[in-house]
Length: 93
Ligand SMILES: [Zn+2]
Image (cartoon, rainbow, N blue to C red; front, side, top):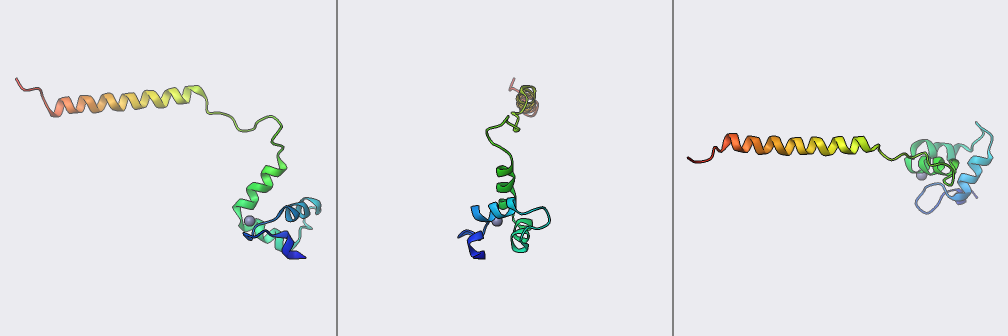
């Protein structure tokens, strides 16, 4: 009976999640709560189930200015490297 609450990998099965969401707060079966407390994978799955994926996207794309900043910093680093090579290797006269 209790084994059906866990899947083959030892994580919570859909029945286990259903039992957690059906139980009133504080009344979750102890073995399910214990596994959930120590298993990041099940915590993420529970969060993913609690949040409707069809709703407005909570995940925001990084702003464009940040991407531009990274590109500019990379260009600056390349320019500094080129200047350093010129300083260290002066052209032969
Ligand atoms: Zn798990």
